[in-house]
Length: 340
Image 1 (tube, one colour):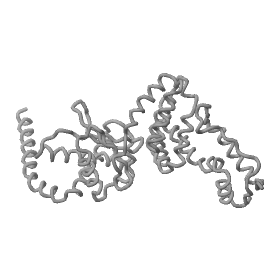
Image 2 (cartoon, rainbow, N blue to C red):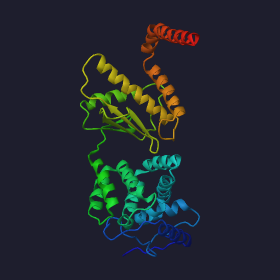
Image 3 (spheres, rainbow, N blue to C red):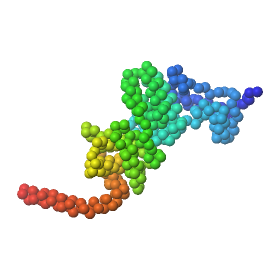
């Protein structure tokens, strides 16, 4: 015999409140997106809930109707997602950075919410204003949350009649399909190494060693990408201040000896420099002098912590040379002033 149960008055009010919030959340579900169809909160055949205990109410809803409890439990994550898009629209770095990190911490809830946002007819229309960036941001977030779900979503979107500009965004983002996490540093920070890198295992071992440097503030970095260095590049590393990610370049085909040592040392210094940007939570793009000065100071401090003996010996050897160079420069300047 089927068990018949009922809502308590209080739980009905909560369920209806959640239903109304979801309607206002602007999450359209086209018929083609069958995995996330519109759901209707039931009005009968559900369990009793204690009017005075919200925890028991949620536990009861979860046991009897997981789809309903998803709406209740995912409200905070949905607010994070909306805050992320709002931060993108206003170019507010701190808002984007915080929302991005919070969503990554709630992967099991955030992943279906992102896919719900992507199941929208809005991508069929011409983008206006900041909405042009939303599709790329949502796909990038989904890739970070679940690479398999990202692949499925790319395949689904490619079959949709979308606006050409959104189609272009999808094709650009589809290039990430081959991205695979090479490994995680300290079990936390995912590392992506380009297939162009000749010795990925060697590079990863260096990263693991550098990340163990005393006082290095690295654990909260969201992603580390290693790409091949090409002569036309005008940078050795970059800090993505929106998402707290770091990009490092690595030069292939370097001979052994001093050239190999300098390649490794230069990459290590760049690594500390970019982590310095993360440590100070810099939020301005471009070469801002104050930000670069702080990152350089952090770089020197971490390199000294990683190689105390090398730095001490280097100071002993090179200090007289540097002093002589400064003295020569000073005397040359004085001589030119006296001639005038």
